[in-house]
Structure formats: C-alpha cells, structure tokens
Image 1 (cartoon, rainbow over the protein chains, first blue to last red):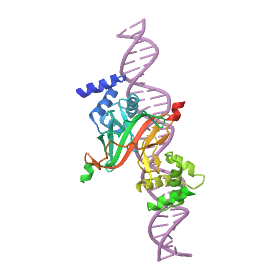
Image 2 (image 1 turned 180 degrees about the vertical axis):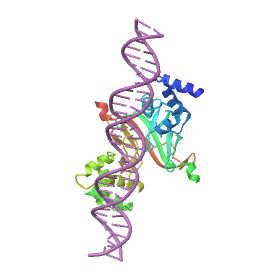
Image 3 (image 1 turned 135 degrees about the vertical axis):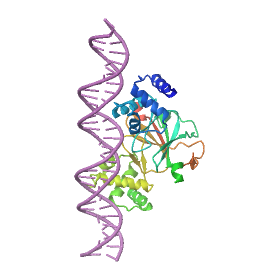
Image 4 (image 1 turned 45 degrees about the vertical axis):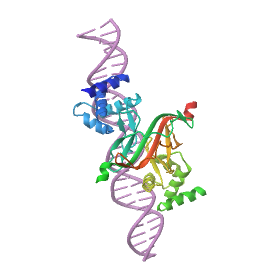
Length: 138
Length: 138
DNA sequence: AACAAAATTGAAATGATTACAAAAATGAAC
DNA sequence: GTTCATTTTTGTAATCATTTCAATTTTGTT
C-alpha cells in the first residue's frame, strides 16, 4: 500500500517513531484531505484499532505539529482541524456546511520579508470563508 | 469622549440599539486594539458595570459579528478574539507570548476573484505566526 | 401607568482539550 | 531471551470556553 509507505517515510523523515497508532493517524491524514477533526480521526480509526484512545490522537497530532509534518488549522472556531499537507496552500471554510476545502495559495504582490515590524514570520495562513459550490446549488 | 461617540455611531449605523453594555463592549474594542478575548473584555468592564454577565458579552459579540461591525479571529486556538477594525488587515500571533498584533494587509499578486473553484468568497483572512519583536529581545 | 418586545442575567449543560498516573509496548544491554 | 529503562498508549478525571435556557429587568410604545 503506497500510502502506508508514505506515512512511514514521513514519520521517519521527521524522526518520529512509527508506532501503529501514529502510522494510522498519518495515513488517515494523507488519504483524507478533508481536514478532519480529532473526533473524525478517532471515529475512523477506532474500528481497526479497538484499544485506541482519543488522548492518543491528541498526543499524536500534537507531536506531528511540533515536528512540522502536520498543520493545525484554526479556521473553524468549533474544532481544530488537521492537514498533513504542509506545503503552502489556502483554506476555504463554508459557513453553510462547515466543510473545509483546499485552495491554491494566492501569491502575494511581493516576496514576504522574514520580518514585518520586527516580528519574525514563521508560518503563513490564508483563510477564506464563504459559501461553497455544493451549498450554492441548493 | 470621542470614542464613545464613535461606538454609538458604529452601532447605530449598523441598526444595533446602543445599550449601555453594547456601547461599553464596542468602546472597549475600539480603544483596545489588542484583539481581546471574551474574558478580557468581561474582566475589564465588570468593575464599571457590576451586573454585567459574561453571557451578555458573548451575546453582544455575536450580534456585532452578525452585523459586520466586528471580526472574530480564530488565529488563537484557545480563545476566540475580537476586533472592531473590520477593514482588511493581517494578524500576527506570537507563539511565545500569545499576543496578537495588527499587520498591514499583504496585497495579493492579482485581484481576488469573487469565486474560486465555484466557492463564493465572502471573507479573507491573513494570519501569520512567529516570534514578536518583544519576545525576540529576551 | 400598562403592556409588549427586546435585552440582560445567572445557573446549568455541553463539549473540546488537557492533565495525569497507571499499564503496555519497545529497545538496549547483558 | 530475560531484565531493565524508556517511550508510548490508555482511560479517567479535571478544566475551561462556549451555549442553552428560562427568569428577570429594561426599554419603547400606547
């Protein structure tokens, strides 16, 4: 299974020991680009890992974020959402259905400096909100 | 007091009845551009409005957001933060001290279309995270 | 002054996240 | 391959932001 390979490679590349639980979470993120919440990840994995604890999902995601292999999205005020795609791209939240979509990163008019007003920029987020195409049709 | 005037004008302009509580919240937001949390707003106003309830602060901010006179910022995963400046500008969260700073909006390379991938864009957020100048010095 | 509508309040419920300590799994040394 | 230390996982309980809701208070109108 190629995604399993990828999950393992990603974790090992970041120096994270690839336990069953960690592999499962990373694999889930890699194959479900829906920006799932902790609950969604837990519910999806619990059947195949019956002893899985929600705390483990929290721990695991925290570890992933700290090691730069996952992004935490705060676009949704209810739940944190997670994305294993850490390349620059934008996110769109539908205020109707609550889904979060990936969007192409919108290039800035100029290259972002390392510092703005003396603040060192480490992470850049582009969030858009509105009505998604699905919800528009209805 | 010019800010009191402004707060009243803003609320009336949005068709919001300017009660004591609402004026106080709007005035606080207008004069404290620190993107305060509900708790910070409540703690600041409670001394001068002894009967103030935290629920009222929640209700009031919800009303302000619905009527477009306040922005809710989800940049901080712990608490929602509020900003009465609804003009386009960016926000910077210091991951060290947790403060949220205003930044100039970074122009995009092209005018943002109304729709992207069929999704209708209504709100645009630019969030940056890193280490602020204050924390860098230490 | 009397009434209806709107706003405020406080207590209780909800629900996401964190803290923590015990149990289980893993890896290294022998 | 057994022993021991370290890491990881687990479940429960605590925390804390936010929402719900019904009662009370305030406001505007007649």
